[in-house]
Structure formats: structure tokens, C-alpha cells
Amino acid sequence: MARGTWWQIGFIALALACGDDTGTTPPTTDEPGSSSGSTTGMVSATSMVDPSTTTADSSASSSGDTTVGTSVDTGESSTTGPVCGDDVREGREVCDGGDLGGLTCADVPGFVSGPLSCLDDCSDFDTSQCFESAVCGNNIREESEACDNFDLAGETCESQGFDSGTLDCSNDCTSFDTSECGTCGNVIVDGDEVCDSIVLLGETCESQGFETGALGCNPDCLTLDTSGCGICGNAIIDGEEICDGVDLAGQDCMSLGLGMGTLGCVASCMAYDTTMCELGCGNDVINGMEVCDGTDVGGQTCASQGFPGPGMLSCSPDCTALDTSTCTSGNCCVAHAGGGCDDPVCEASVCAVDPFCCSFEWDGICEAEAMVDLNCAC
Image (cartoon, rainbow, N blue to C red; front, side, top):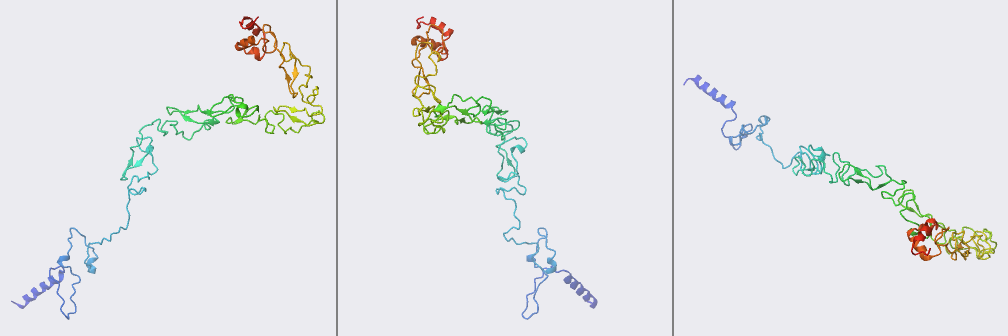
């Protein structure tokens, strides 16, 4: 073969060898004493990456890195995604436990009330307990309802213009029930009032545990006013008492014009006991605050006291009142001033039918009643 031909063959072989570094020629094993046995820049067939499944890192070709297109899993994530169940609405979660984004059943189309909740997977709201329309009686004020049982929208008797009481809701939830509300001062005991002005519902000082006095009603109509009531014997002047034991309201025999002596208080607390005064009760002379004194009855008679029948007017031992026990009423068959008449049987029979005859006056009507009463001898 000619010399030129061999040169051309050698040149082609050299060009092929230099232009392809991915050949299948296995790496040369380092010989002892050799200066270099490295295969840097070459990738063996066993470490090749299928280009159809993995994209090689473009920087690997220049650095000789043989970990092209691979990554290392360290078991840790650089970011934390939404976690359903932590009560925090995040990411694509519609809700999460108690975090409903401030919404209620009324905010969900098609519902008006009820307790809204969240599905277990946080993908949507749970409307199973929501109501599609107003339900009177569920204690939740909905749509056009004015109230619903105990849900009164914060309203009270006072906000409705009353003074006291307990506001309620009507049975159909369309209005408030104010029947238990009260207005103090309208002379009607309403709402939770105990009294109203002069209306005391039959209560008296005596029914409240006192002995004398006039019961009243406090300005709020919620309690009775017992400041005018008294208890005789507690050594304190209260109610309508004139004195009480040693409490003589600063009076003495001299201040009452009864001379020297010691002033006292009668057992009823309604008058002073002047029997120990120099000019006190028992001297047959009316002195000071005495109503009468012994035989001195101030010119009064049984007739002047409403007893037209016979009798003798006298004075009580403490000089505080006239004694009419010996006075008698007039003839049952004749009209007269004063109540009652001289025939107890006839009197009882007539007065059972007409109490006026015994309480006030035995007038012409009482006389006519006695005339036809079989218990009266007229």
C-alpha cells in the first residue's frame, strides 16, 4: 500500500478517537509507577442516565460530576403544607374545625340559621344542623321573627317602656309578650310590682308583723313602705304611737301642763299615762291631752256618741277615751242616729242583711227592715 494511503487511514482513526468521549472502551487500569490512571471526564456505560426519564444537569458536563439529574432525600421538608384539624383555616381549606372564617348558617345560601360546622376533611362546611327557614321555638331569632323563646334580641321590659318586670316572647315569635311588665304609678299592681301607690293588695302594718301605723308603698312599687308602722313595747316611738315605754318624745308632766310628777306611757302606746302627774288622770278634771277624766266627760252623752237609748257615758281609767259600754241603742222599730238597736236578736237579724244599720246609722231603711223581720217585735 502506498505511503500516502496509510497516512490518511491513521488521520481518520485519530479524528474519530478525539471527537467521541462516550465510547464503550473500558477505562485503562493504572499501572504501577504510572503518572495517571484517571478517567475524569468520561462516564462508564453502567452509570449512564436515560435521557427520556431524567434531565442531566448542564453543569455536570463541565465539572465532571457523575450525579447528573439525581437528588438526595434527607427526610425533611423545607415547607409545611395545610394541616386539616388544627383549627386554623389555611391554603385551600374552606374551614378547619372551629375556624369557620366568621361565617354562620345565615351566610350560607339557602339557610337562615342554626349551628354551622366544618367537614372532617376541611373541604367544605357542614350544614346538616342549619335551618332552611325560620323555626319558631328553637331559641334562635331568625328572619322576620321579633324574638324566639329566650332569644329576645337583648330587649327587656325597660327597653319596651316599662319600669319593671320580665319580658317574654309571644307563642308565634312575631311580637314581645309584655303581660309581666309593670308601670309604677298607674295605681295598678302589674308586672312584678308588690304594690302601686295606694293599692296594697290588702296588706297592712299588722299583716307585716307590726301593731300600729299606716302601711305605704315605696316609689319603685317593688316593696312595701313600713316606715309608718310601729311596734308598741320596743321603747321607740314608731308608726302612730304617741309614746313607747321610756320614750316620751321629750314630754313630761310640766310640758303637758299637769304640774309636778312623773309622766309615763299607757300600755297601748297611744297616750301618755298622767296618773302620776300632780294634775294628771284621776282628779276628775280634764287636763293636758286627756279626753276625759273620771266624771268629767267634757259634756258628752250616750246620745252624742250615737246611742239614743238610755245609758251613762263614762271615762276610761287612763283618761284617753270615753267609755260607752253602758250606753244602749235606740228602739229597733224606730229610726235613730247611731248603729244598732236595743234588741240584740232583732239587731243581729237586720244587720246580717244590711250591715249599714249596725256600722253607721239605724235609719228609715233599717226601721222598715225591722218591721218585716220575724225576729223583731215591732
